[in-house]
Image 1 (cartoon, rainbow, N blue to C red):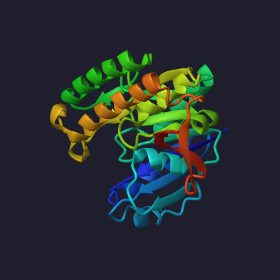
Image 2: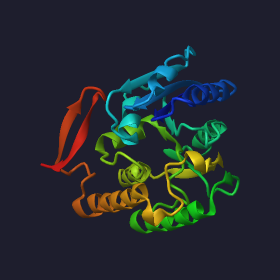
Image 3: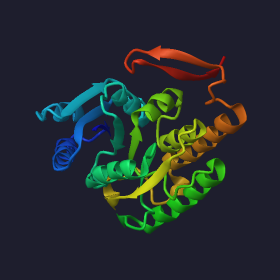
Amino acid sequence: MKVSIIVPIYKQEKTIKKDLENIAHVMSQTRWDFELIGVVDGSPDNSFEEAKKLKDPHIKIYGYEHNKGKGYAIRYGMARASGEYISFIDAGMDIDPNGISMLLEHMEWYDADIIVGSKKHPASQINYHVIRQLYSCIYHLLVRVLFGLKLKDTQTGLKVFKRNVMEKVLPRLLVKQFALDVEILAVAKKLGFDRIYEAPVKINLDEGNSSFSLFPLFDKGIQKMVIDTLAIFYRLNILGYYNDASKRKWIYDKDLDMRVNTGELG
C-alpha cells in the first residue's frame, strides 16, 4: 500500500529542507511505499527555493503565488497524490514523523476510515505549555458538544485517511485555516465515514516558533478558529450544506482538478 504524505509549508525557509529530509528518512525505514508532497502555500520567503533543492525521488515540491490557507494547500497536494492512503503532517517537526507509520498501522488494525494523531492518547508523549493544554481541553469540549465526535483531540497536525474519504470530503470544505481539521472530521462523519480512531503521537512543541498566543482569549487566530467552528455547526446542522441533497454552488478549480464549493447555496 502506498501513502501520500502532504506537508503544507509557509514561512519555513530555515527548516524546510531538514524537515522534509527527516520525514523521508523516517519513512524509508518502514514497510510503506510513500511519496512526500510539499506544498508551499504562497510563502513570501524562500521556502519554495529551499525545498526545491532536495533531490530525493520520493519528495515532490509544488507551490503557488498567493497564500490560500492550509485547507487549500492540502487539497492542492491531494490533487497530485497517488497513494491509497492520504496523510498530512505539519511542518516544523514539533510532531515526531515516526507517528505516520504508527497511524498507518492503526488504519489496518481497525480497518479505519480516518486515524487521528491524539495528544490525549494514553501512550502519547507530549511536551507543551499548560495554558495550551487548558485551551485544548476547552476547545475539545466545544467540539464534542457541537458535533458528537467521540475523540479526545481533533487538532493535532497529523492524520491519515483512506483516499475515498478525502475524495468525498475535500470538495465540500470551506474552512481555510485552523478549524479545517474539525470540518474534515465532522463532514466525514456526516457522510457515513464514522470509523474514526485515535493513535499516539510524540510532540515537543517549540513555543518560540508557535503562531499561537499563550493567552487564547487575546489570540486572533484562536478567536477565528472558534468562529469557524460555530459556522461549521451552522452549515452542517442548520443549513444541511454538506449533504448530497444540498444545492451548493460549485466551480471547477483547474489547479485542484476538482469541483469545489463557492460557499453559496443555489
